Image (cartoon, rainbow over all chains, first blue to last red; front, top):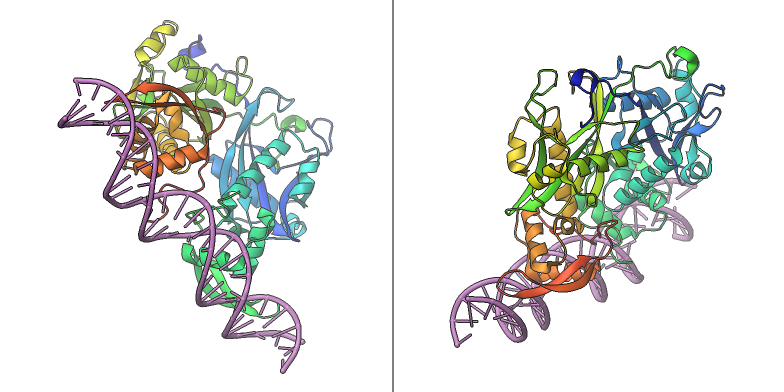
Length: 243
Length: 243
DNA sequence: TAAATAGTGTCTTTCAGACAATATCTC
DNA sequence: GAGATATTGTCTGAAAGACACTATTTA
């Protein structure tokens, strides 16, 4: 604001590249999984052939807001329109994209597992290849851009919110049982939880509504559904206060 | 990613305007205060004469990263280089700026009170007018752009983190006393806290180190300093679990 | 020495962890 | 009916709230 501005309105500033990336999580195979998309293997691309978080340029013709842009990318990659979607943060700088100063608006999404091959079939021809990878595996890859850092931040955010919110419920198809929900919590947290304390906590929080019973394992169990999908429930304490 | 791209690398997309805005908070006069900057009163400006959060365009020549850009704006407006600075989120869309599709990266900062007139004197001639306003007053103003929404989000974030972190300590000049710290907590939360529980909590959290005594009110009290300014301490529970 | 504020002690309440006990379903 | 898993009950412990109490400093 303190420099000479052409036309006096700031429009003379060179504009950075602007993208949206989405870390899409699900739970499968006793692991937290994240969706990866492969960069096109052409020399013009900054990271040809590398795996990356799904995302891309904001389309100012098509996207009314950042959130719309994120929903569009989620839909294009998974075919899923409704899922938990939260803004994670933004990463921007001169060095993160060889094509120039760029800033990305990062989101994360939580959804029940769907086969991603099937979703890709729904997409238009020429859709980029996508696959689920366990978070540990994904973090070991040399992801494109600074996507490793973004993925790490997304995982940190999810793990930390799992300690005191009902977020993992969004990873399950409905209706689900309390043992199934506990299992997802344990998968994300990487440690076992006490059954009794877990059930008390979930039921006291009041974010579940009873649904039809589910025949999950050796016997049927009470099914539940998320009462309000607009936001996760917040518990009064974290799972493990003491260390 | 599914459209025809000039040169095949996405650089053909029209680029949105890119800005950084900072909600800078302090505590003064028993109120949480936020710094406002006045938009230039010229017809080319989208909101001439209106109050706004300090901020402006990213300068790709000058700013290495988004964080650097935020620090620069903080420094320009307050003269303060060191303070707590955290990313809040980003707001972007077709309608938020009449000049075109724009996205802003919003940060919030916490700092001890300084007179802003003095800081403005340090700034170059032509610096825009700035002033502190209580958060309630600021939210009643017709701020420029969507800054009311961003300010509300910043206030919500600060209020919520105050329930379980040591954030308010960053609003005080050091050394400060525990009664002073409690007072700031009460100002931000808008409700009184129990003295005994408060002191236990702060001291048990271990984020304070003893400093010289301070003659604050009717008698001197033990002074304290933040042991680690890089991040706030997190308490095992919120202040008020029950409702 | 009185007023005011700094600082402490202790009882109660809330809710998570541990773990045992009981109920229900499938085979 | 046996085995497995779902569901409940009870005891303990950590930390917050309530509130009374003591200590220190200034005027």
